[in-house]
Image 1 (cartoon, rainbow, N blue to C red):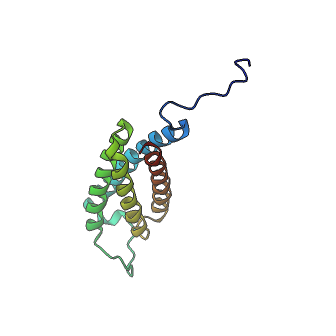
Image 2: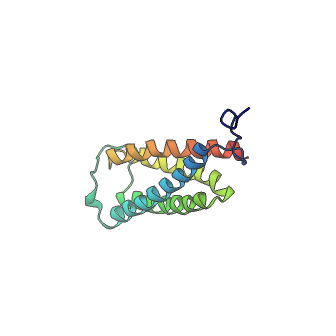
Image 3: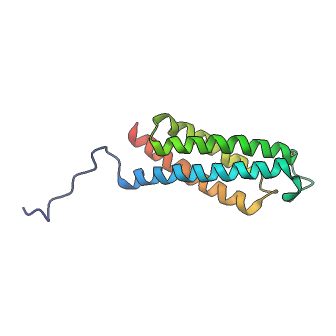
Amino acid sequence: MSSATKPSAPPPSGTSGWVTGGVLFAGVLMMMNGVLDVTRGIMAISKDNVFLATPDYVFKFSLTGWGWIHLIVGALVAITGYFVVKGAPWAQYTGIFLVALSGIEAFLTLPYYPFWSLIVVALDVWVIWALCVHAERSG
């Protein structure tokens, strides 16, 4: 049997390159989304008139309140994303929780920033998937 017909060996860690690359990409997305969420929180805290206001919204908070929520959740997501990239085992499960929280937060702020909120929800779903697949294979 020639070396050209030998099947290739699986990666030593038992995870595929797609999963490893996906987790790295998810960590980078978490850092980016977290930083952008922090800046969106700062904008809402400092200047409420930057955002579109919806008068009859069921989940009505002051924009300053939403700003603080974005600031805190964004900072936690960014920090956890850094540790996901560094490979900290605890960061995967914490990341799943925080990114789910970020997705809920983005959904609830749809009336204030609709297009960006939909993008964040979609990216958060992908990040949760990547972290869940990696956690399943490594755990």
